[in-house]
Length: 114
Length: 114
Image (cartoon, rainbow over all chains, first blue to last red; front, side, top):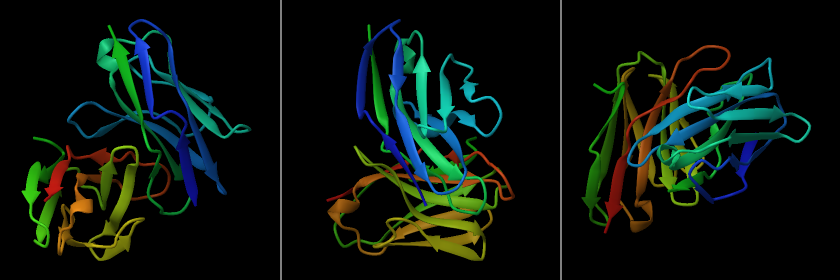
């Protein structure tokens, strides 16, 4: 079984400042890792994913996350946030083999302040 | 039109009433899921289905039932609604097969049980 811990439930940050949203996972098997974003009054959408290869993955809107196997972490970062980044962010984990659905963390609410 | 459509988008119902939430998808995916989102608790899996003849309980299935009427339709029922089932409900789909497959979410149904 897998589990995900998002260490911060809320992160307020000023516009143009850097941000890091932390995610740690636990699993007895190899996993895929994901960040999903939920904008106000919307469903979740995939932000970025780690499947294999380079441990640093990037999204089209400037976010990046780094897979750290030894620390079982997949923290999300952005060097300069915008007001439009205000949303809830969910880290998720899924097994590389087998058929179990994704397990989500409890979410981190990012509030960007003008 | 949205790829994953949930109806209704909002519903207020009374304690003890039976209610059905519906989900339909045009992605052609075999796998469908129902999640519940509560503030501070993230997304928790209620039920999932890997094909029309397959139904599996998730983390919090008590008090809920599901029906997979067709590949494209997956409905969630609350047989006798109670106030602690007040939450935001999401349907999601993903493609079958080995390896990773992105989950696509509907826009959610906000259910209030009074």
